[in-house]
Length: 239
Image: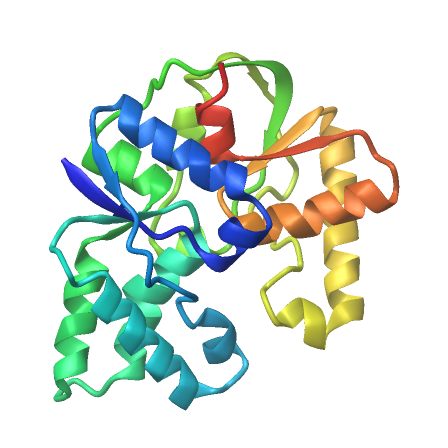
């Protein structure tokens, strides 16, 4: 199968290892990965900040870029997948041609764990990792209707001891522009998340979204807490 990769802004700038791991996983499964070079931001920061007009223009650009073929679009980001699959439909009126185009793209766009488990029906990727792993459930997976797909993949990684994380589905406080506009609240939320991670005894915390990992990892780093943060793709590609 040929798939298109939506790398995402944060993946490109802050966590390219997760993007590279996604490509390597898909290659190892026998799929051809195309990277449309014209891709930019999906428009979520604009949308969340109330700039609907500019978010529409960004969405139109993204739709154009990923409509040069009808191949599935895979992204290592629940938040960007949710923007395309859910919010794009809110940006255009039902009678607009762009609404139909947005719906068509939404139907063939998948977050990585969704694509692996529900489309390819693959859970064991032959990964190996020695460590006590806690899993943070990123908020946007709920928007996508996903539940235990990442956990099913993590459980098949040889050597992993999956430890229970209290309030695993509680927001880490990033929320994109939320963390900028409401810094004190965001800071309290990530502090609570970090305390849950410490209490779990994990030496590694895994999630599906770079924004969450940036926020959690930043807090841990500033306080010199020796817990590693990993994107799910990085864990699944670990040997």
